[in-house]
Length: 395
Ligand SMILES: *Cc1c(COP(=O)(O)O)cnc(C)c1O
Image (cartoon, rainbow, N blue to C red; front, side):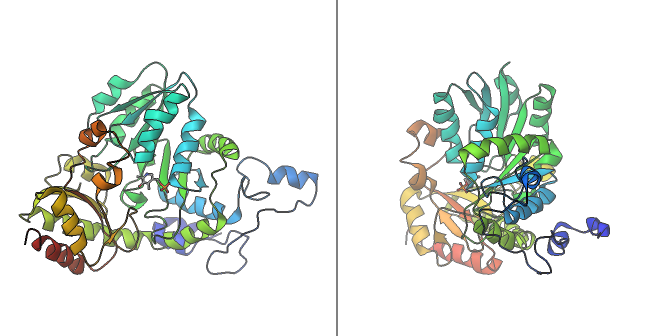
């Protein structure tokens, strides 16, 4: 039925998705809040409890969550997937699936803070060896690989300096050695970057950010081959960090406008980055869409848009950074990103107490550094607001 629909773009396919057999004739997806589903007999119970089943008991699967999984898998070009209670639930469960004591994992110098802590402290405490390398250098990945390397953890673009990892080159290295690759694709979104097309085995999102898109749900996703997802599913039965059906339902609603939102966020990110680059109060702007970004060419090769997230360093340091944030009228001073409304954050304040001084320095988290996550507001309004806040500095 409706095979012709496969020729349509993602958003068109999503909005005209074939009914999954559970929703009857409802035009928008239903919320299946029931934790238990009754079996008709022994044979039916066995069928329902099979790996990656989507009924029976919500820790093992849920129809609303299964529908979201299929939408994300379609978007990323993967066979199967899973939803977790949060991005961190997805990362922790996946790494625990593929790593045991005596194995080695290679990560990047910069990662989301929870991933950094998992690689630096938690995994080593269970006997897993970890290395973190300069993600801008493909040979740094190659040199870090050991005979017991099982997994390479990637994330691009990555905070705080918006470095880019060459996904195709690193995946080639990994494939030749039988090493799995995992990529956190949260910042790029699958609209701007599809890591599986570049060779990545497992793609992860904090769906809390762009996929949900409205600052109102916490969830994480993993997309991969059926075989790999079956292994992650098996481990998730024990870690139990499973998405709540209500959050999956909210994310299904959010993802319907993902493409529209990301297009506006791409436009806003680029406009703000260009404006900041021309302003005398700004020392440096980090945004992969700027020609001044040292990896701009690589960004153009593996991304189709550069997103709404950027960082910049104010010449006036800490005082200027807090003055700037106080003067903004539109962006909230809040930690999350990827929602419809803009947020702004100071990494030095957010991470300064939690990360060691060496890491703060190594990551380039300067006192004047600001992370701006553009929402979908009108571009001219956002640029004007950033402009008036900068013009007040030092007055
Ligand atoms: C937020 C975030 C995470 C963690 O996701 P949660 O949903 O907050 O657990 C992981 N990676 C990136 C890049 C993020 O921005």
